[in-house]
Length: 107
Image 1 (cartoon, rainbow, N blue to C red):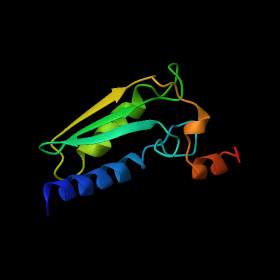
Image 2: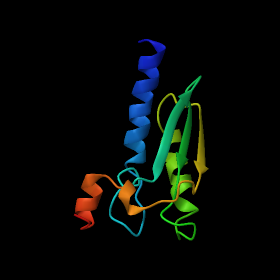
Image 3: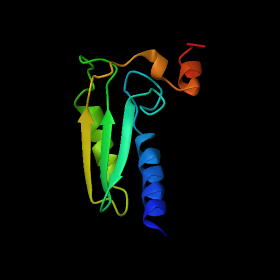
Image 4: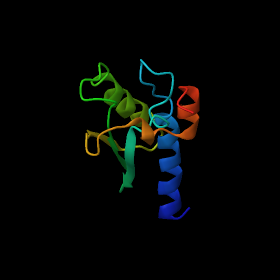
């Protein structure tokens, strides 16, 4: 596989891992909630995730980012993982996927 294909395949596996992480108060994974702003793969198989939380006072502020990091580190071929938390832009329910909005009764 070409380097770009390898990175895309790893990015897909990272996304699948992220989709197994749930906010403990909401029955929707954090990706569909819109909490993931960026997933980047850098040489050699270093993963960077920029994410937010539903609020700065989120009770799961410690557990969600560490769970994201742990799940990604468990993937084969991942070298290092960095998870950055940002509140810019601030989270809003508009960031949710259609499936999440449907699940939570927003539509």
